[in-house]
Figure (cartoon, rainbow, N blue to C red):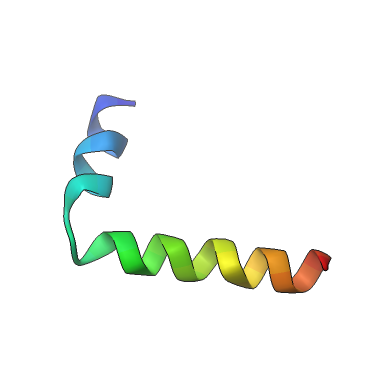
Amino acid sequence: SKKAKRRLRKPAIVPAAYAKVMKKLNFCG
């Protein structure tokens, strides 16, 4: 989980993860 946290800290990866979450919400909602 430490590696995952380190990845989330990278500014370039945060928007990508956020976009994935939004897509999931759009699918469910």
